[in-house]
Length: 436
Image (cartoon, rainbow, N blue to C red):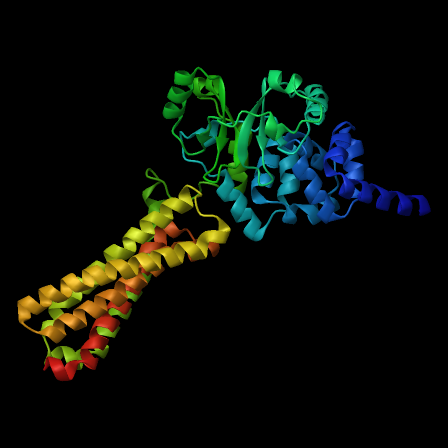
């Protein structure tokens, strides 16, 4: 017991002092030995170690650990890393790890596994070599030798930064003739061709054929490396059975598709139509609140559809941009608020311009300056809220685990109608002495 108490702090200190060298030593051990070492280390250190290992070897080590260890570690691993690990695990081992993945993490992994039918993401393989940019040449050569004995020979290796973003490709000849202590980031070829994971297979095959490449790295919208797609696999249209199994395990692609059965489509759509009916009555209730001013100034009723239509269209524009960003995974977690603010600013600019145009139309149509002012101010407020809500609603619904594609437009219409009517008719009450 005393020896173990001495041994664990020594190993911990060694890994903390030189993570790269320690990871290299770990890769030289058997999977059982490496798993035993990992299980003896603090979870925070384990998380750093596995990110420095080749993904296939990391998966093999985790497969050898016990359930108690997986229960501690799995919830703390990044969704993208976990999704890739699952692909590399034997079929019987996936369910064991899956038991420790629940809640929000499960949804995030599902998102990582959802690639459109016929896209590069569905065909790519995660068996590839990648190294951190600060690794030295002799360390990379040693790793390649060790990994080659474990079925990872390759003519190319890829170099990534600390966030797993692709920064270059490493040619084996360039590596072999480099100085032993030369860092990989000084050896790599930085002008590397890559494919986005959502690119259509036919387009990707054409790009590879044009360049005469047999393979290309696959990245996401933030240039994080996800895998490698091979020309041969695309031509044959082969897909990873493992990926399909995991998609089913996590329910990826479970929502309605274009050829879903009528019963399934009704089950998905009808509840939201009832929600839409409730929200429509909410908008009607707002109009009823101002029944008195509308009775005095019936001209206000003429502009209600204009307010609702412009607000709905402006919100739909923001919604479409954000929905595409969600599908294409172009929205980092730390930039969601910036995106909402940006759409709000855009709504303010659009609202000011459209408000002025609408005010001029109302002025010339009815000869009332204050009527133009009321409709212009109402339009400004509505378009600002339309921009903000068009961006915020799908992001909030996605965070809540609700499919934004089926319900965002219903909620958005309610927001723009209620706020638009309230703002327009509210300004009418405010300026009624000048309108009557």
